[in-house]
Length: 245
Ligand code: 1GP
Image (cartoon, rainbow, N blue to C red; front, side):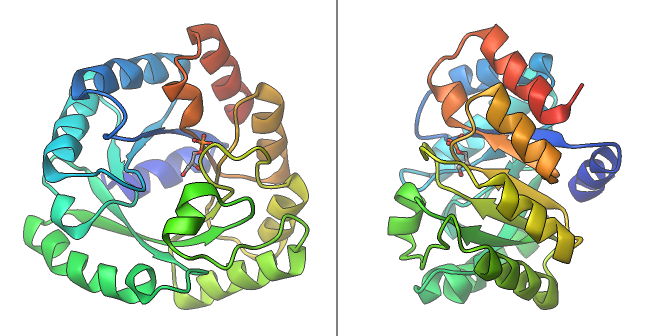
């Protein structure tokens, strides 16, 4: 089964949880331990990637360790063309739709596509929209961030993603954001666009996770929560709230 189908089958039954692991933030062994703990807490899939410091070495070692320790599928999220490797189960082939830098709209993807094809990796197309505060990823990609209250603009971006033919859309408040994507924005997007919707950035509490799920998020991503060495009970509470079970 493809990783895409694995996620779609799960989403058909309810909201799922994705653990984001940055290979630059800890050893591969530690990443494996984190993924195992996340799997035990109910997480469904692991995204690996980050805004800087990603190399072929740390990415492949992390992907391998995560798979071996948790058995969860590993999808590249971000990263650079020269870091793509065959330890990955799939690659999010993403366009940062509101970036003003062509490297993140087309040029980077043109460099990555032949590598993905050569390795025979599954690619899953994704439109990625950065909402304020946007954090590091907004600065690195020179994004024209969508305001937290700009619901109409968010809907327009989501509709454009659908018309481009993306398989998934991701609304991102930025890693470590003090304000996650507002539930009203999630609800509005889902009203107009029936694509699987990934929500992340700043989700650290069960309340925030539950609000995103009730508003219609299909995949809820947490990263910082893991990096902060939150205790197992806290992680479990957030994942349980994200999934509603
Ligand atoms: C970042 O949306 C993800 O790309 C996760 O954000 O680190 O704030 O959980 P956090």
